[in-house]
Amino acid sequence: MVAFMDDVPAPVSAEQASITSKKSRRVFSLLIDNYDSYSYNIMQMLAQVNGTPNSVTVIKNDDFGSQFNVAWDHFVAQATAIASQEDVELKLNVVISPGPGHPSEPKDFGMCSDAIRHATVPVLGVCLGHQGLAQVYGGQVVEAEEVMHGRTSRVFIEGESPLFAHIPNGFDVVRYHSLVIDPKKIPEELEVFAKTQDGVIMAVRHRTKQQFGVQFHPEAVPHVVFDHQDGVIYSLSLSECKIESESISQMWHGSIKSQLKELSEAYTKRSGASTSLFSSVSGKDEVIFRPSRSRAQYVADIDEIQRLIRAGETYEVCLTNHLRAEYALRDPLAFYRMLRCRNPAPFAGFYLSNPRNRFQTPDAINDTDTHDTYALCCSSPERFLRVGADGWMESKPIKGTRPRGRDSNEDSAIAEELANCEKDRAENMMIADLVRNDFGVVARVGSVHVPRLMGVETYATVHQLVTTVRAQRREDADVVDVLRATFPGGSMTGAPKKRTMHIIRELERGPRGVYSGGLGFLSIDGSCDLNIIIRTAIVTPNSVTLGAGGAIVALSDSDDEYDEMLLKARALVATIGAYATGKDNGGGARVVVD
Image 1: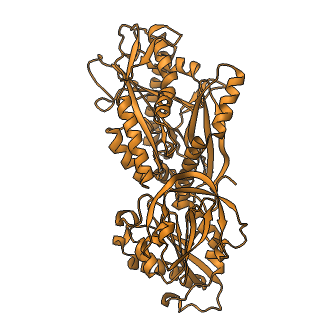
Image 2: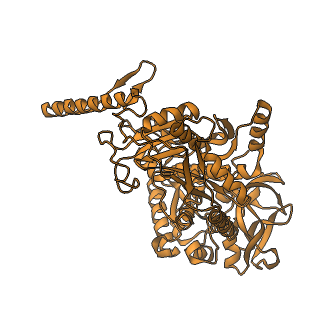
Image 3: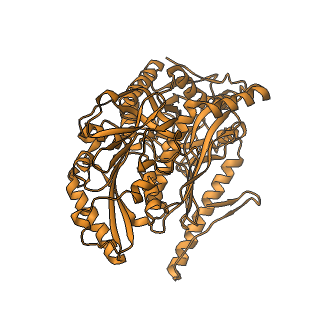
């Protein structure tokens, strides 16, 4: 990639002719984004290699009416304006990103085909862009014998190429593809100069133009304030120095004091007391949860996802189900306290939508869509997003779950198996790259990093495979910009995010509601801390709903995925059963599978 950017002399185009070779050189890159969740990782790398943050222009493949000539003129005008201000020589290139779909489909590849045909500067195609080189020059792109998403392979260089200068032969890369260039139908214009050990084409170049393609990623990730200690709540407000502002602040503090008093009283009351925020109803001998989609339908959805993965439409889909019980949980705060004891989690939280409103009779509402009073009893182990006042961002996506063992030896063996499972590592790798991409939209160039990749974290009932991603936001981006770039959390969508969310909408046949959203706070100082709303009971006066699911990849087994979905709901189901019936052996509630 360094060779592509700096060492390969590019043909001088008309746009560059006015800049003399005596000036210092600046490289500018046009990155065409095929709606992938890796594109901004490439943007960050290009900016670092080019040497300046403003040296990369990112456009979507359907911007400017999918007309490459218009997009190119726009890019050249931007680059020329910067070059004239800094008195530097222009060196331009085009990079075509990965993406879902097939390069023969205009909806998937947009202006990229014309970029390959008409660009007079170096072109680098990555993954889908690599496949597009073959497609444009008459080759064929077909389904691979084995899908490779988030998995590593060794690549062997054939001959010499400045693209791989200083890279040892036999290097490991991360692959994300289910389509390949057909080795039997290589266009005459192209030559292959890198393959895997089993012969899959990993790199091509044009024989006369400076156009290159690689079937892998250019880099590889592997190589209200409550003081709990003092028990004090601080009610804070900022006001302008005006008399009326002071009176408004005093009114606000009075309102907050009243609400806190009410919540404090509710917290200390015994479950089922007459002053409970929820209406009092009789208990049950057993609470029955029923999935929103049957086992057969869930398995069929997994089969459809794997068909789409093989076709290149997605790499990973987070498929979920809702488990619903017709049960009037009388005191969600008391239940939440029990949940915290039984299933402690680092990003747990309780939310009551309207503390001043008593719940009406169980028949008064059906769900959170038709009434504003509901409770979230959340035992989430996952941080979606933390942004500090200093601008540092952190996300801790989870992909990979196992139950705790019956003894210490079994427990250690299960954790070790999780840490080394290729399928779970592939899931986690894809989401780690997605989060890096989302951070890259708003991050200072060079600041995105992964201090911990795929570490096993152990909780009361499960082991989880967790990655930590950090970056520093740009000065021109605030916390709202960060949320826009990152929401919803990639661990609950899959990758690439936009295309995969359309697939989820079709398969799940209904909105998720607050499930898989975020619960936390945004502060006036520009900070925030939000979890991913998972392992959460959504309580309304006459029902309790749980969301659960998992990431579906090419290596997924349908039965295992369904069982993992139920595993993730197990702690909540058991706690609801214990709360409702007093049975602490897990017999108070169950999921009825059709």
